[in-house]
Image (cartoon, rainbow, N blue to C red; front, side, top):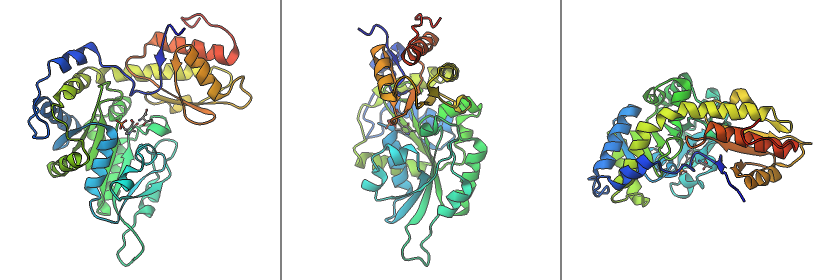
Length: 359
Ligand SMILES: Cc1ncc(COP(=O)(O)O)c(C=O)c1O
Ligand SMILES: C[C@@H](O)[C@H](N)C(=O)O
């Protein structure tokens, strides 16, 4: 019987804190479709300020935040968006920009550090003037932190360069900022500076910030006005959404401060895993709260069996491929949890039983 659970599947698994639950119970609410919900307005005002944009809009999920943003920018048939081949919009959002929005994806290879080479982005730009066979590029999408590359941070210098490229070609720039607060804390750069070059961004409240539900998209007043209509079209207009926004405001005020600690515990786990024979990872590439590691050929156990063994001891991780596993930390993972997880990994891979405190 599992007596202890350490949930490293994702930072989407957090449970609302007591403070969030109290805020939800006492939230001031009204009809958000009619733009009257006071808690939603409060959250949107605060998020616009934090991100340095004119306006903001609460949306039910990061997937909807990205979809609405892409569709606002690419509102003409035959539009094309340049995005990373390993980015969330391209891999994990059911191809919504195409199936729902009719927008054509033009992928450029994500480097290990989460960037896309700027010269390859420029080479991918297509303008059909004189070409009867091309879609028209209208948007570039970045992702900061870049989750599938291991939660890597895009620097403000890189982001600004992509922004300059977009402007040079009359394109818009959207940033999937699901974990932009993690990037901000890891880089020591304010969120508004990391997003300065972007025309829009989608920021998740339900990841490292630990809110139970939701994201916020930010941009110009004109962009958000169009986004509000599209949100309704997609069924994302909700009524007394203030109940969710009240929890998100608590997350914004309380959990951002914990992200640095999340990153320290992630590094501690990565360094511990790196000591275990049979696992391979690049500790230097662990910049925020995500770790990818491989079970090497010849290890005592396969990745699949390791995940099952860990689960029997209450350690939950995500198997990404036949050899690759992902662990994601969040504010509800303690240092003791990290030590316990390491002891379970060691036991599974070396057979040596470790005391719960990791000795
Ligand atoms: C980088 C990134 N963008 C967007 C999303 C989508 O967010 P949601 O799960 O709220 O749709 C996720 C994960 O959930 C993500 O990791
Ligand atoms: C899997 C993916 O959709 C989710 N964003 C996560 O990181 O857990």
